Each structure stands twice: as structure tokens, then as C-alpha cells.
Image (cartoon, rainbow, N blue to C red):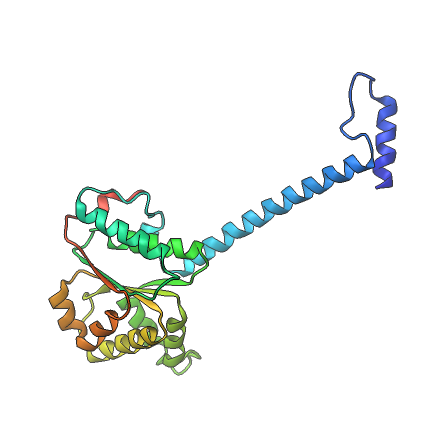
Amino acid sequence: MNNYIKLIKRMKSIIPTHIKPKFKNEKDLLNWNQKKGLLSSQSIQKKNNKKKIKKILKNSGIKKLYINCTFKNYNIYNIGQKKVLNFSKKYAKNFNKKFSNFIFSGSPGTGKNHLATAIGKYLILNKKKILIITIAELMSEIKKTFNKNNTLTESCLINKLIKIDLLIIDEIGIQQKSQYEKIIMHQIIDRRSSSKKSTGILSNLNYNNLYKLLGERIIDRLKLGNSSWLNFNWKSYRSNITE
């Protein structure tokens, strides 16, 4: 600090009198340094937070196609879309207040993933752990645990899935129907419901077909709490996704 003071005094001796120095004394210099240090610290923190959010988004399972999807860029063309948008906003906002599952049912491209992603991103910003995974990806991860060289067991993987704040399982109904898949689905949804962990289901199937596919036990678990079934019964929404 003394070197700075000496430098200031030296500068004063050579600077023209009509030019006013930025610092009049040691206190002014100290305050300036503290302010600059605080701004620098805030800038670094902001950059670190952006990197952290980017990493969390990458691990959340959100696909590149939907990474920019938010509540704001969900375009409304009919009353049904307004209804599902309002539900999704309310669901995300009240997530901490109550345990509730949801099912988004409708044809491909009707905006199910858009709003599921918007819910997920909102929760991530509020420090919640979310995962969006297709049933095919889920079963693939389960089957990897069968490898004797894999240190992660089926039980450990399911335990990890139970701890996630919101698990969204996509493409229910596209996979081949098998008893093993139904057992895995029941284990995950049953244990998550028992732990009051919310689960979201995205499917192209209507109620009757989804009921036949998953079975009464799984559907009953999904109905626990303040759960909702939303029908996306309109034309393809994909052309409305903002890149």
C-alpha cells in the first residue's frame, strides 16, 4: 500500500494542476480497491454459476432439441394449450408445497416435452434435481447393471432414481410391452410415491391404452397425491419450438 501512496505523490508532482487525481488519500484508494475486488468476485461467481447450471442441464437428460424451451416461448393457439401451460407453471411454482405426479398424454409433437422441459428448468434454477429419460434409455441403463464388470447394481441405480426430486419418463408406449419393464416401472413409481417424490409420465397413448400397458397397480400409484392427467389433443406443436 505504501508503494501506491508513493506513486500517487510522485504522480501529483508531475501531473498538471488542472487535472484532478482519482484518489486524494490512502482511504480513497483502499475503497476503490475493495469495490473493484467485489465486482471482480461477483463476475467470477456469475461465470461459475453459469457453468454449474450448464453442467446440471447437461446431466438432466434434457435433449438439445428442447434446451431452449421455456414457459415464455410456449405459443398458445387454443384453450387446451392455455390450460396445460397454466397447469405447468402452477405445478413448478408449487412443487415444494405438495407431492403430485402428472401424466402428459397426446400425439407426437403436441408440446409435451416443451412443457416438461420448462418445468424441469424452473426446478433446476430452484436447486432441485430433475431427470428426463425415455423408457428405452431407462431400460438400457438397467440392463447395463447386468454386466458383471459393472460396479453399479440394479438396486443402486433404482435407489439413485428414487432420490431425484422430479423424474420424468418419456415415450411410454413406444417400447415393446414386457413383464420385466412393468416390474421395473412399478418398483420405481411405487418407491418414489412412498417417498413422496413426484414423477411425470409423457406418452402418446390415451388413458385406456396406457392403462392396459402399465396396469392397474402402476396407474393407481401415479394417481396418489395431487396428481393430474393432461390431454394434449391438438395438432403437432414442433413447428412452434423456438431455437
